[in-house]
Length: 369
Picture 1 (cartoon, rainbow, N blue to C red):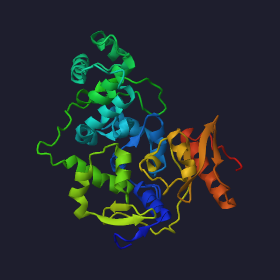
Picture 2: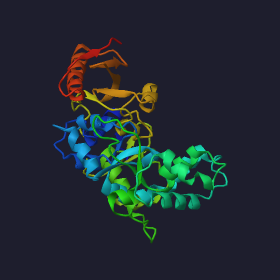
Picture 3: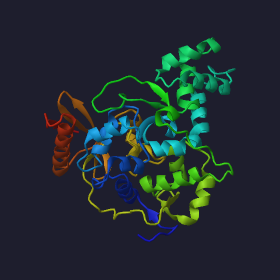
Picture 4: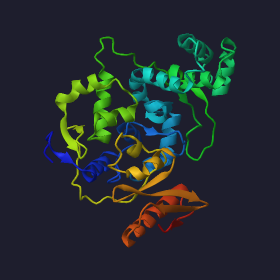
């Protein structure tokens, strides 16, 4: 499709572009670390969900590969975009973290400002780094107990959240996040875990990281408005980065009249391209990565995406939720399915059940609407 600032892309066209960028239109023959990087990380506060996310996107995905990447320290679990836990390529975290520092701090303050009133955050950061300098992973409770005597009137939870999510770049160490493994959160500094310091901010204010974020976001999520970029990243200070890369980009309009930016050579499939049924994990960024999510989910169902419901895409849109009951995958439609749609959802559900059970079960139930 030729690029033109007056060309209007409807929700179906945008949805097909999203599926293509998110590796959901066709499963990709892509190495796991490349997929994690291409997707700009996977939201991962629920430790097992990224495995489903990659299984739905990659051909012949072996979950052990992702576990190995965590153990090998090539992929890490850390707070980043929107102050949520993401599974990130190690190189991306090191490059991007300092650009997110102010946002992370402000997001913690948005919850705990009153609790942290009177706490010098630089002093708190220094105290936390001093405790973590021995290279021993700690739970939040262990870390806060070690510093709480300095701020006895402050709620320990506020101190811990600010240290771990806002002030000291941390990773959640394995076995947390390994396939079929239940483990509590133990934190270690990013620099200690990876043996490298995070990249410092650009000294000349040119913001190369911001420009890279714009390009990477559009590659995985575009075409998109600047409000979508802001909603995905949590960063408000990207207008200058957008302005800097704008000469490289093409622009369109959505049906609301918003300007949509995109990389000129990124895929924008025909809106009639068939879209297979796909099962998404909880909190998948294919849904959460936008301010306007109508390209993939109806506004009436928007709340499902932030409530931890797993979604089923039918014809490229959220049309059902799914859960595991015993050994069966249970699909709950959000609208009436045609006979073909019901059959396709059941077939994909059987493969999900087999994946989750190592082939022990292919049981699926598609409930009536």
